[in-house]
Image 1 (tube, rainbow, N blue to C red):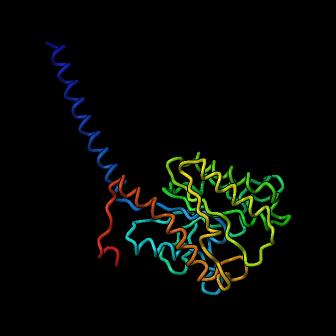
Image 2: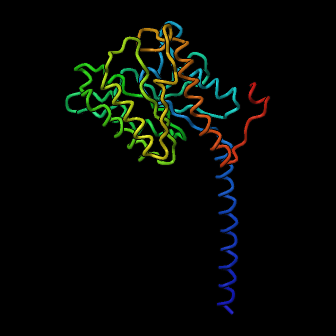
Image 3: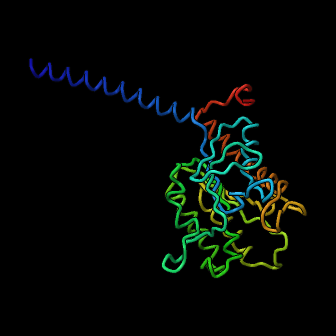
Length: 266
């Protein structure tokens, strides 16, 4: 008798646990579907931008506007905040002057992405927009980096991001042209070639050929290196075009709700 009672009690308890688990799983799935997609803009001053409109522009504001107008629910994330021109989401992870890294911490300050990447990914992004490396090629003695090793260090950084955030998608951009770049510039070409190779070999990494796709021309730079309003708008459109397939695929697989026309206008 006691054994039968115990067995019945265990079956009842198991049923309750299954119901609770099912409810919890549904809530987790609903939370995942309802929340905006977290996008981390990661890079140097081209990501950070200056204090507009008197300085150089970042692509972030223009990109956020394009995404919102297209009906995508996104949230830019990062540990830094600066409201960019043309947008309304200040969060980002752009650091002016930063190199790829790593550097020798015994002799140089860690003004680089690799040395700080763990806290930079603490926002748990779904998508990372990575553009970095031009400061490695323009480096002086203060930055303690070897131009020739930039391609290998870029690959190491990307591998580290994938290891730390394997469920995220990474859009890895080539370096943008500068207004008066040397010709030839083998180190520059080597970084862009390595970026393409890394993306081709890594399923969650996608190459963005910003060097070619932006089509920068006279007037698109503010100082020969940083972007003017028109240059930043061009870069934003390139990011947008490369983001769309990822956002559409994510929406279809997750069943995430798209905003209504009224929500888009708000």
